[in-house]
Image (tube, rainbow, N blue to C red):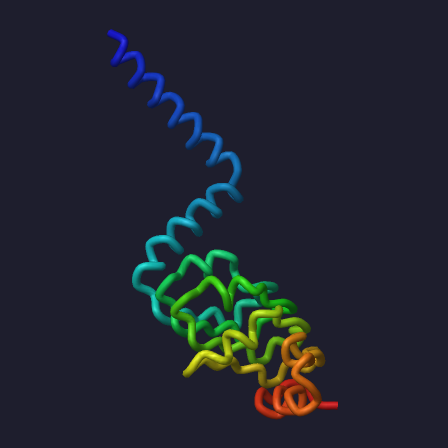
Length: 155
């Protein structure tokens, strides 16, 4: 029977796919991360990833459509991708304090901060010495306000 043969072939293909995934732990991990982010994206409102020695904000965070608060403080994040501020629609607060190597916030931060109730904590980020270009383009007063308001780097 052709339908039975087709079902057997599909089962074998699925088994081969599972075996290939099992042979590549990175692929399995990525599939699990995507599954978790997709499932949590419909309900998760706060995510605390602080003190995890992260080098970057996980890319799958942008899949968390209802995420309002993200704590990635006390990590080793050097750069924040614009996608964080642009593609997480419910995000209102980001805690980046104590990321000692944080140097760049991307260009979408000012737009994010102009929204009512939106905030970012950048305290104790000594390598962050350059404000986003939109802040710099607004003039010296905006730069002073940026550094004063966010208590970024001193000296």
